[in-house]
Image (cartoon, helix red, strand yellow):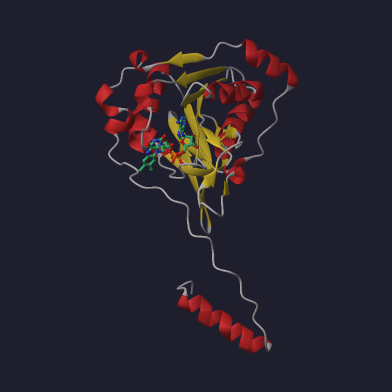
Length: 261
Ligand SMILES: Cc1cc2nc3c(=O)[nH]c(=O)nc-3n(C[C@H](O)[C@H](O)[C@H](O)COP(=O)(O)OP(=O)(O)OC[C@H]3O[C@@H](n4cnc5c(N)ncnc54)[C@H](O)[C@@H]3O)c2cc1C
């Protein structure tokens, strides 16, 4: 079985703070990490490899050269191979152009059974790339996968809903997007870290892909970010005093004013 995992290197948004004076984001010293949902996606692939023979896992990312570091982290967790799609022509892409590039990379790899992606990346936060890749490869997809098992030739997944889950049977090839409830990602192992740094990470540029050059990168993106800004700090908290029912009343009035209830 050939499993591909789409992984993205993201800034650790937990570490991004706001400069109160200028209202801008402080990005200095913010580490880049493997996107958390993608770690769950990779872990699920590794679990399949633990339990079945003849499983190979390839991680693929589109990003700048420094994404090599994250790919080696994936190798050190247990992935067999890593591919970096990196070219200035891919830069500034929105989700449509991003998924065109990644789908072209996946088509070049070919013969895959399962593609895992994360539900969402913590920087762009759109949750669009996985489903768009599936559309472009013309394969079925199940998003928000919180449980996974193989039964013969079928794959049975639980798809998380707000108030429960759907049980879905799919056959391969399929693209699945992982949520954090799916599993607990493993740590890298020391021997695999050493191997990861001896491993050859393949770098593919635009010339290596069978992709329409007009359909990747900033120029091809149907959406453009024309302004980005730091949200206003929240208003100060208020301490309510009085009897319990008076306080409850004030809370209800306040929530109604803010259209929360
Ligand atoms: C309107 C708009 C304009 C943008 N303009 C720019 C821009 O000018 N410059 C810029 O740098 N960025 C830009 N971006 C951000 C860029 O589109 C996203 O970083 C990228 O498309 C991924 O989307 P996301 O982060 O929302 O991922 P999601 O869709 O939330 O990610 C879901 C999953 O898809 C997979 N995935 C996502 N991205 C990658 C990747 N690169 N490689 C491998 N797998 C991946 C991962 O498995 C991930 O968990 C823009 C985004 C939007 C919405």
